[in-house]
Image (cartoon, rainbow, N blue to C red):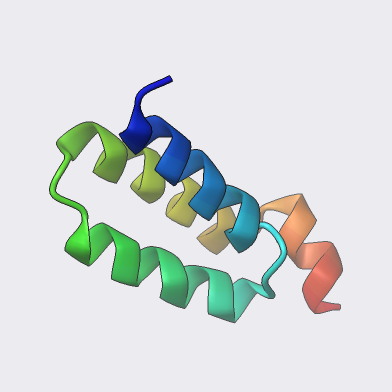
Length: 62
């Protein structure tokens, strides 16, 4: 794994522990500051998964 991939994986692991609103806010900040387009796509996919009601975050916020 490249350093960028490790960084994104670490961020996603941390985001998975947040409630839905905080996770979306964190992802928005990361997407805005991420220079790598492939990393942005990964972050956007996770954003849309959570925004559309990803099961893990639904359980946490209830």
